Image (cartoon, rainbow, N blue to C red; front, side):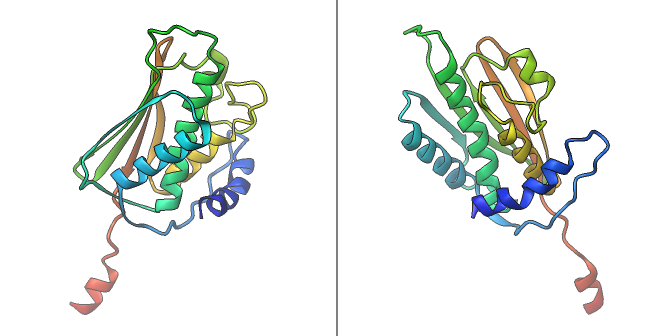
Length: 193
């Protein structure tokens, strides 16, 4: 489950609070996961939990598959979407013209899938950008722990991928996740040859 995946990673996150600490890799339960289904499930759950007036846009080919642990991929996207929803809630602007939108897109280029999570919220404050992905320091809101992005980063790194703040300004934030396909172990094939 996604909760147990988070619990597995927390010791690694806590030990990674030092800049010299190494992340301990683990082997995810990698399978081909339907990107459209996973991302749509995240938006449905977040929309139901928050009941916020947010427009969710999915820009994903229905046939796109990602070689990843589906529970862990869900947790990564869920953390990013939940953060975007919280940013909307904390935004003092009640501009009726502002469209509150979260867009999830995914594309494959060769053996890498790029997932983008973008929003039209207030952007990340400088303090949060300086400590991005740092547990207990990277929160952009009062009372936040900063664990959501730290956990997301650990899970993406465990898949051999990367996650980065692609863009942030006063009219939104964009995160980019790149997940490579896992290499095929050739030892079994070579032994049969």
